[in-house]
Amino acid sequence: MRGALTAALAWSAVAAVAGAGEKADVVATVGGDAITASELDDAVGSSLFMWETEGYNQKVKVIGQLIDQRLESEAAAGRGVTVEALEKAEVEDKAAPVAEAEVNSTYERVKARFPDKGEPELKGLITADLKRRNEQLRRNDFLRDLRSKTTTRILLDPPRLAVADAGAPSKGPQSAPVTMIEFSDFQCPYCGRAAPVVKKLEETYGDKVRIVFRNFPLSIHPQAPKAAEAAACARDQGKFWEMHDRLFAHQDKLQVADMKTAAAELGLDSKAFEECLDSGRHEAIWKADQKEAESYGVSATPWFFVNGRALSGAQPYESFAQVIDDELLRRGAAGAKAK
Image (cartoon, rainbow, N blue to C red; front, side, top):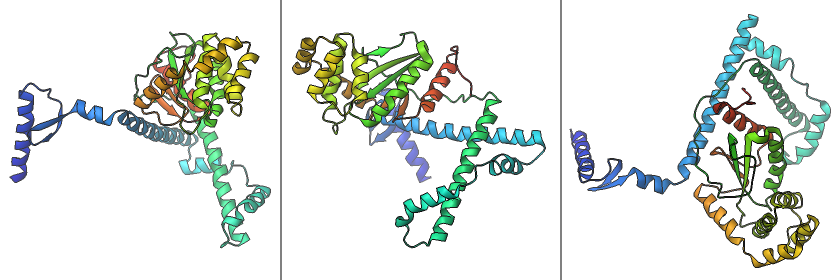
């Protein structure tokens, strides 16, 4: 009875606020005051989007497992065997054998970390671990083969964030069905590792993908801000991407003198470039990019938004291709690949 009374009083407070002309989007009350959904959104900010993205990725992982289970069950039924028998025949029996040389080399590399284990015991553990690894590799190949024979699609809608390109340097047509916005740091080694992957995506997908580059120089990289300005100065002369590629290819040469040398070697007007870089007139560009990136929840580099879908870190080509192919399928674009 007491619980019902408390609930009724709380509802009365909500109704009073709504009746007073406020929006009926109250998520909590403090005495007679209301906390609204819009206040909650402002307080949570971009964190909610990141949580939603993490939740979506976990759901997709589970969906993938369910798809694999379904495919294995169908394959086993088609052969008239159990799933266990199918896995033994296709995974355990076909996994690469553990090479003695690999066991010995691994033992030499790790034995100092396990002083309490004798050689036979440690080598036994290493052999078992390598066997599991080889079986997992074979399982991945087997499941990939099963998927290649059946069209599968994940229809769960991903969370998206409206990310502006802010007139930043871009490649690809405005009409491209997929826009990939990258927040990057010219001194970041992971960004340097991602650069050839982005280049491969550009070459593979052509005019189906528009690539946008924005800056997010990290405080731990003192040369990154000036490198961002150097790229902007090169853009003034129509050679942003040439400087972009040069900076990532030579991350050990990001001093101001190095960048001036690079500009000359790229055929830029050296005097105009040096005046631009020394003046710092493009400092506002990377600062604006940085501030906006933080509002999106960006906290590290490289960080990508593919049609508003977050993808962080130096991911392999396949991770980007999976998201891009999914986006092309969702938009009915030609050349999309069903998985």
